[in-house]
Image (cartoon, rainbow, N blue to C red):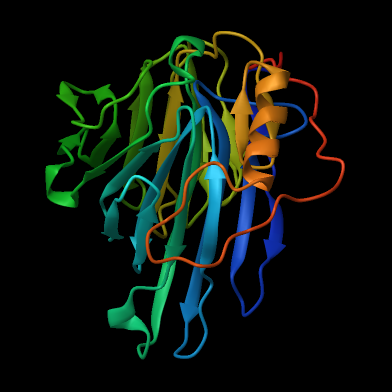
Length: 309
């Protein structure tokens, strides 16, 4: 296989150890590619073993202008937010939290598992909301694993997590054309991925793949040329699980600072002031929170969506 082609850009992860063997790989945003479709953030965490007496809890923190999309391969976490949602997140389900004008949430180890040893492994994505919907009312939507369409296409198992593909449509509500697939390639299998959206990327979770003759190592994101599909192949020695993300490109630049996304710089600054003053709401039952980082609260230049490859 070749190492790359002009039509495919390979993004390497930025790894961070959060302690206790809990590793997070960040693929988006990247210096050479800020977004794929509506997705402006892509974190792959774990597999990480959770031990009794230790927890990688995320204390209450705010968001605006985006939707968080949480998907687990293994494990469990408890979601609570400032609009009163309480939901245990389990493998195979999609949890879509629309921040809109502002929401606060926490993610913690479920109480039923405090004395248990288990593995957490999953993906956390952010989808920037279209400008017309950046200030919608916050909402939380849980779609159970058994409600996600699952099918066999070309002899390959495909779960349509978000959006529409191969005649199946996910029930998850979105604000723009969005694609998110979980694909299980059998050992030695080949799969023709059509151009399901103007922008697409492929990310192998647990093994290397081939993509139109390009070697794509595990934990590397392959961003396809705009409007193109690809032929995906698994090695003959082992099956590979991968995800496909994409959709319509962003409708203009986005500022991204800390947990805030907006098309307007002043809105980011206002969100920072609101959180510092604790005016964004509270999660019932929570007494902790993550403080606003840094003083002064900086705002980076806007992300322009599809950085040319």
